[in-house]
Image (cartoon, rainbow, N blue to C red; front, side, top):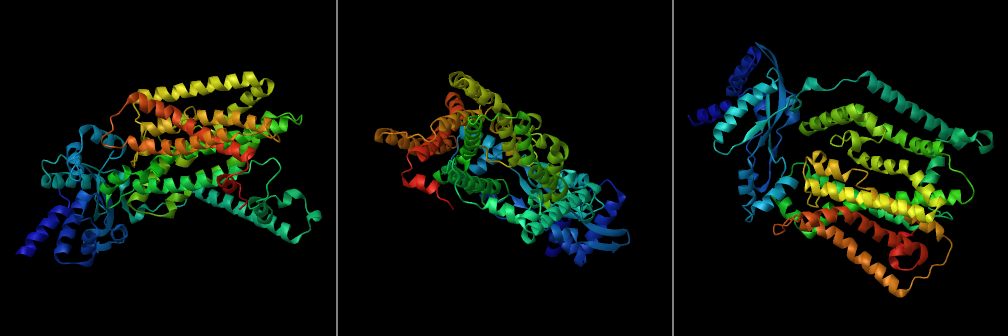
Length: 563
């Protein structure tokens, strides 16, 4: 008797009702009869569906079922073959319920909850998967669970959502298209060229082959890639700054990726984000500005090194050489994401990734290759990391006229750059003020579609301050090259105190915006967003300047190591 009651409850929950097609209705009836008879395929279908998971109040919000087990189901019945369809439902709780659950750990004010909702708890949802016969559509699944789950949770104001792309069958495996085959031909051609070039370089004398024949040789290029010899005009500490900044960026991205995917203790994440330990992640976004400074400094420094020898800059080759250097690896990355990632894996979240890639790289591959994404599709960036290239290339396009202005008249050039810097800062402040950004990087799976990311974080004008400072700094380094600049002990102390105080402060201040007791101040937040990247950049400039003109100190020696 008890077993029958429990089984009836299971069938009422997982057996779809009020479906739209006769085939689906027949298959559901077959599933119910087979499950009562404990037939293996029906047990697998039930087993592959999600059950109520423990730790929901601790933030365990995702139960994905068994994706492969569901898709492996195939059974012949009197109504035709039944195969598994795996669907991932999203159950969205009301804000009132979220606040109650978050308040279980400690009381939370309305203001702090709004802050959490906008920057961390945006789109909080329970993810729940079910396995149904493939003859049933996603609309049948949504209709049934809308009724069954809402009946059980009456009064909690839950809403359900399910998209067609969130349901998968074994037949949904993408087939190789003509574009995919063209991709393999191109990759194969590159591999063949590299192999031939390497063989010629290894086994033939240098005098017997033209230089272009070994241009793609692994031997030749590996020597260049792994060379640690410093050149005459090298700014040696830049290599150390690059390395450390890259480590911090990889570290931060790894954490942010984990925050954007389901975890079993999401509530602990809220507590961690208010701790000092987390500031190196959400407060360390300024490390990107280090790269913008380095890029601008080297461009300016190299430009004046060349023009000082009487060489005229050919603008056509100035732009062409940069595009050729970036085009091949960028084209390879975009084509791989657009054509190949759909063949690399599968699963509930992988389908979402494929859908995102189809929208972003499928439609906007051209804006990625032309570095126009912040202007054309800021909320649908193809390969998220390429936003940096768009910012860098925007200012690279503008740099010749700015550098020529400095070359003709240092005073006029500095005035022009100062005006551009002020304009960028005013725009930065205005956007932050208008949108009431509170100074923190949102930590949410929907980060890429937030106004902060699309209208502020990746916009070239917003990032203009560090680049402009880099162009000026590169010219100053060129003018002082080879000269002995005496820096007094007092000036050294002031400089290093500025670095040791400002850089940690910039990172730690971002924590204030996440605290419960913090009252949002529109002016303070807007000023912080407008100036904190420039303040970070000035600190890095002091480190580079000390490296070039003092050569002392353990930090400088560490950055200048030839490793």
